[in-house]
Length: 219
Length: 225
Image (tube, rainbow over the protein chains, first blue to last red):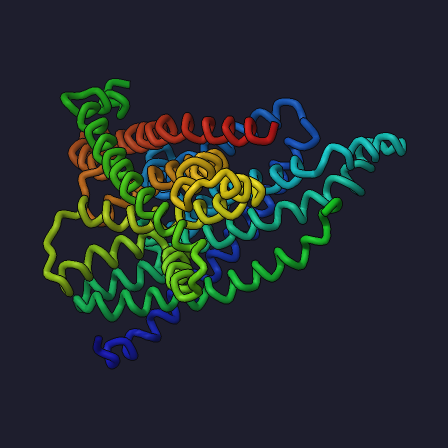
């Protein structure tokens, strides 16, 4: 391990670090929005949209991000749809993440106990009131653990962006290895960089999971 | 449509080659799962141990695999094993080892969760019947834990299969790598081949993974009833 090599590479890694951070941020926010919309369509059983959502969710949950990116970046242009690598990456991450987030939200809504819903009905609540005052507040707090797991997962998935040459962390490391053949040093920095993002974040998310647990009644 | 790219799929041995690539991917996933689940079960058991140090070590092991993205994990094995330990194994072997260790870490957490959620009464009843520790584990804990952990384990399997798409990055002749070769060979004559080949690969992954995730959902639902 040569510390000088590591030191020299730090400015480049800092750039990759920023790239990974903002791509993850945009991807996660987008995925949350898509996921929430999809799960609402499913919760209110909107005809046609509900079926479309479940096809979308199954398609994206059961295929790798890498082939989704390849399709967007290499296959769509021959059909006349050309997008930059970063656009492809963000679209891929948002829709992959959206499918996982939709499952997370739906899992939360489904987890609300039937007694709660029946009690609401007995009080004469409308469907909308049931959703607003009973299912959503409890459902959201139930879905936090799986949303948190998805957030970590999506950040790690940004490493796959390196296959379409987006200069994020992994791509930076692979480039440097290709140039200087110092794999030990660069891979070491790479692992540390992911740890710097993911360890504090996963601690924060665990804390958040504990915070919102009050939302469940009955235990 | 005489130059439609879809014809490339069925030209010569292209389709058979793609299926061959899929076979490589599935085979690596299966081996990684086999070794990973065995090792993971042992580690999961160790994580319920009373020894704090043992628990801490395997906790760190788990967190390491949770933090490092799988792409990076593959490169760690691909670059560091040959260089530091002089092991010049093919990429497919490296990938199998990397995936197996990753599976073992993830599975250890599933096993641990299942073992601690088997009701205490069950253990106490077993002990009251005079079962030995080992008998208790084999006849009481393991069967019940297995039921609890089945959906999560199937999900892990689908994740491993999806992750085999990364094999192309360490130049294993997997499904995607074969697809890229076919695309490159036909790029001049059939520029739209890329669309159909990647479309087919997308579909093939879906065909392998979807039944598994249906199965896992079914098992999970049966558990709830």
